[in-house]
Length: 281
Ligand code: OGA
Ligand code: FE
Image 1 (cartoon, rainbow, N blue to C red):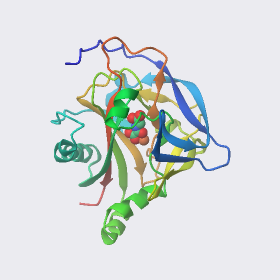
Image 2: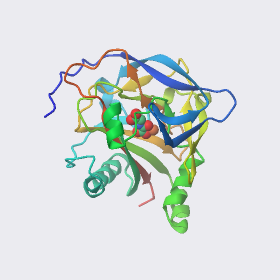
Image 3: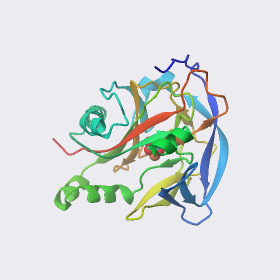
Image 4: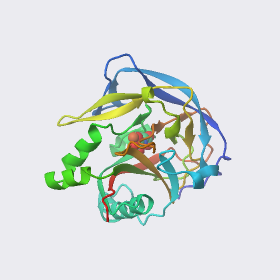
């Protein structure tokens, strides 16, 4: 059994994050080409020390439409997140219900999940991916509708694209508490349009696009201290509406300046990728 650690007090912390620098050349990420620190990337990047405010004290006032993310209580019946069968049979339906509850969408689909393991030896042994050091948003105005068209039959895709849809990740720890490499999130209201740099996401058989985030001192970064396995972050990575609601938010992993407290495990997490279609009832 994992020894339980005393969580850190809720407080503002400092962490190192990797930001893109807009050098005029479109950056690219190659998710299938893993290096010890994550996927191979081209482009100019800079590391910055950033203040990260614990949003746990204000969690109940947050929403997907304002900040772009929120912390929710959610107990999963999954006993082993490394068991693909359990993920499909238990975790996927749980996440569909969760996203339906928080978005009001009748139709929610799940198309992918990623397990991230901080400990390098364990990551190599299990062939999992690393936390994402460079801050980003998963989709762009081009790649979000492309995803919908790639996933649904043509007629259904065109029908769904006529209405509002959201791409929402469900992020949860697999071990607890999270006391290192936490998920950090940029309040959508504090990102300027010029902070969002479109980047290619190149697989052997297809191309996607993400937004890499450039640093701007007006950005406000959050995390949720000491996340437990019975909690999840809902993270909006795309909203088809452009009416002032949060459309997406920068996120990634921060390397904290303070060491992990004794008893806390290196971070392991899973993110489940969903699309919520707000078709009229
Ligand atoms: C995500 C994501 C990064 C991380 O959930 O989309 O980018 O380090 N996560 O967990
Ligand atoms: Fe992401």
